[in-house]
Structures are given as C-alpha cells and as structure tokens.
Amino acid sequence: MVIRPKKELALSLIEQMAPQYLEMFRDVQKPGGWRTLAMRFGEIRKRLKLDSYVTLYGSENSVYAALWIALLGTDGFKRISEELNTVSADEQQNFLDELTADVIQGDGWLNEMFPESLEKQEKQRLAFEALPENERAEIVQRSQHLFAFVMASFYDCISVMVHGEKLTSLVPKAIAGDRVAFLKAIHIDKSILHAHPEFKTQYEKALSTLDRDFLRNIGYRIEAPPTRGKIRFPGVYMIFALLESLRWLNELRHEEILDLCVDAGLDRWQNRIEDVTYLTKRLGEYRRMQKAGGLSMP
Image 1 (cartoon, rainbow, N blue to C red):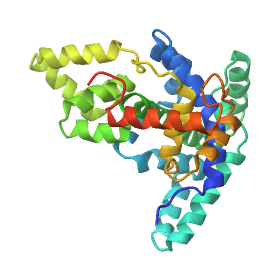
Image 2 (cartoon, rainbow, N blue to C red; image 1 turned 180 degrees about the horizontal axis):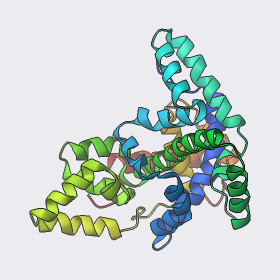
Image 3 (cartoon, helix red, strand yellow; image 1 turned 180 degrees about the vertical axis):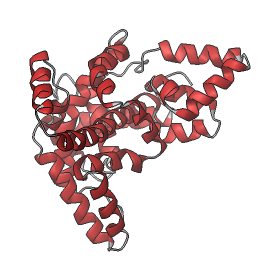
Image 4 (cartoon, rainbow, N blue to C red; image 1 turned 45 degrees about the horizontal axis):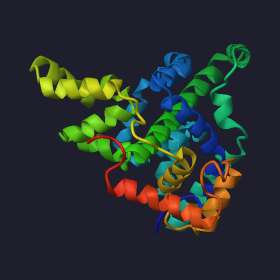
C-alpha cells in the first residue's frame, strides 16, 4: 500500500504550493536569479540558522518529516512516529490525511512565511518579539522546519525539471562518490557545496589535492543558472513535479491534471494547455526530458 495524501488533499495542497513555487522559480530563472532568491530569504535564513536544510536531501522522507515537525513540534512528531509504528496502514493513511488537511487549512501559509513587503516583515518581527520566551522558542523551531521543507521540496522539484532526477536521489549518489551527481546537485542548489558536510569534505579534498578538472567543473556549476536549458512551460512542469513528489502523477486522469493547472492559476493558452490533448503533449515532453537525463549538461 502506497502511503500518500488522498487525491483530493494532494490536489488542494499543490493548488496552494504551485503559485508560490512558480514565483520562486521565476526568480531563479533571471540572470543571477539564484542569488536573488538567496537574498530574498537571506534574513530568514540568517535569523533561523537554516542552511542545514540541505541535509534533508539525504532522503525524500526527511523532506516531508520536516513539514510534519513544523506542524507537530519535535516532541509531538517523535510521539506520533512511535505510535504509527504500531498501527495499521489504514490508520497511517488517516493520520497523513489529517496532517495534510491541517496544512491546507493554514490559509496562505507560504505567503505568511515569506512576507514580501518590509512593512509585513516588521509587523511579524514586532508580534514575535512581544511573545513570551517559551512561545518564541517553539515558533522558531517550527519555522526552521517549515522553511527547510519549503526550500528542500522546491529545489527537489527544480532538479526534476532540469535534470530529470530529484536532489533526494542525486545527493546520496554524490555522497557515495558519483561526481556527475555531485555536480548536478550543486548546479541546482548552490548552498549544498558549503552547507552539506559531505559535499564540503569532498570540495576541500579537491582543493587540497589540486584536482583541477573537478574544481573547474565545480566553479562552472556554481556560476551556471540552476535552470540552464530551455524550460518552455515551467508552471506546468512545476505541477507535474509536485504531483510526482506526492506520488500522484501516474494515477490521475489527464483531465484532472488540466483542472489542477487551471485551479492553480496557470494561463491555459500561455502554457499551451488549451485542452486535454495539449496537456498530454506537455506531459509527454516532461517524460521524455526525464528519460534523456534532463535539460542540463551532464
């Protein structure tokens, strides 16, 4: 039995996530865009000490565990995890659905986390500082995990769109010594090179041994935009990647995917998904891109 959010909840969650993730993607697409995105979230990352989110790429389960910790708190997550080991698959499914529903009902949770205006940022800061110390500590902990989930799941989707493979697949390969996977991973999320201990160790070893070819390739990947290659329909591809991460892409009728694209605010003509036939073509292109190993250089 595959444990995943039930279909209605998965579609609602993606409907909320896709617009914000697409906006982040457009930041990354601009010249020097990955730096723009880093600056946009720089204050949050600095305040909450969040660069360690890159260690979540070790497994897909770790990425989603961060979201559950954000909802339940560390103690609550540990308690529930222990309980889930003793219950049936159906009970595990019900629990996952309840958590997913909680995320969806947190109206505007992504926008609240990343306020765009300085006025909203200041309002949040003042409200936070007015809280008792114990409440502030709990909010910081949960915010850390929510931010970690958002960043890791976002870059995981970008990696699927660009390389045809998730970071949660590439990073373990890189740790095991696969240099192509190493370069593809840092191509997508530049923070991995210095914030992930295993990547940092491999990089420092290359520096100490003057491994010029590897260092040259690292330098190229750090400077190259994460979305190198022509992604014609990023909004549609983002939804495909999110559906895939929730294990629903292969289970939905194409009419359902088209409805999701419309509900998420995608323009049907701009994205060339005027009808189901066009949606099917876009999905075929996405699948061929994955089989070919993505859009980026190997």
